[in-house]
Image (cartoon, rainbow, N blue to C red; front, top):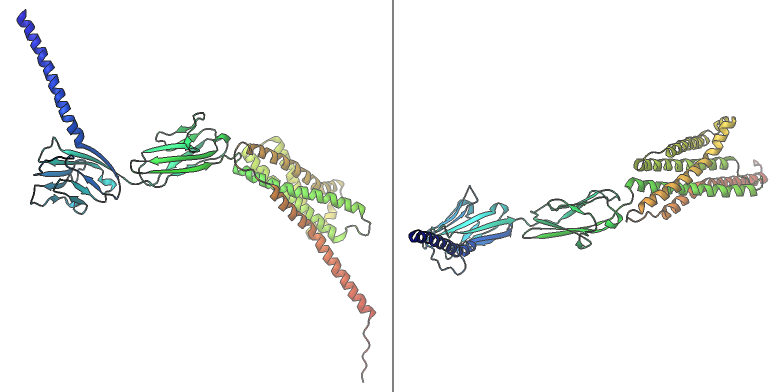
Length: 438
């Protein structure tokens, strides 16, 4: 029994001893291996110094071989055989490197992205302790750009951070200079270049910035996200309906004032003849223009919000107003005598007489409805509201000038007629004396 146990104990001691030796070897070689590995990252166009020996190493260099082991075309860069000999430099590196024979260092000048790779310096044919440097050459990044695909409330918005020049290694998104708030469901793509905001809200308004970086540079840019409550087409509809409303209100106020003046004036001073004719032409023309504007605004509204029965009926009535007022304006301006033919029948006369009044009422009612609904939708965003005060004042002023045009024309015509009559009267009172021959 004793010899067997002694053999077993010997085998155990041998196993423990071999493990200890392995640990000693690992601890002995690991610092040298770590010291022989180096990682460098530089920008294009710069110069980088690659060292062949560790710091404070006193090894005498009898032979050194520099090679790019990751390149299959020209692996050998410098082959140096000791003092007194010229180093053998590869043709593709002759004008781009400086070799220092004293310590074996290699200076690469004007490096480009194609110079990225693993460079190995083998000193005195000792491949075990050969020093390797992994070089990564990156192009400095250009300024980052943020693009937004939409800014309408309720839609899904995508912000993309793009760098046209340079390799991006990391992207960081911020809102108002702080990390993205966690109480809002922001989503980013796998490489963080895209930021998704599902069903954007008014609270998402603010400054979004992206910071793109790599090992040698970083670029940060920001964009102010303004959420629009309505689509651009509804903005156009709001502006158009505002102008139409201003024309209709001006016509209503002018017609009311004109009716009061007509009732208060005597028969001799009432508006008749050419002045009355052109005044009716301009009134019906303005009603036609306002009706066309509201028809256009209704089309924009239907395009975004959909069709309804009430809108179909409204557009039918509006079409009737446009046709009748246009017909009256053209006929009165070109051949007014033909209009009397239409007025002989009671139904035609009613249609002609109610077209302008009905058009004004239709335009005012729908313009108020459309303006209120669009402004309600606008409150969902944070974009500035459309100030319709200036548009109303300018349109009202233009409409008044158009209505005053026949009065100005009539006044000038009447003044010229009076002047002509006075000159004629003077000529009749002062006849020329007969001429006598002498």
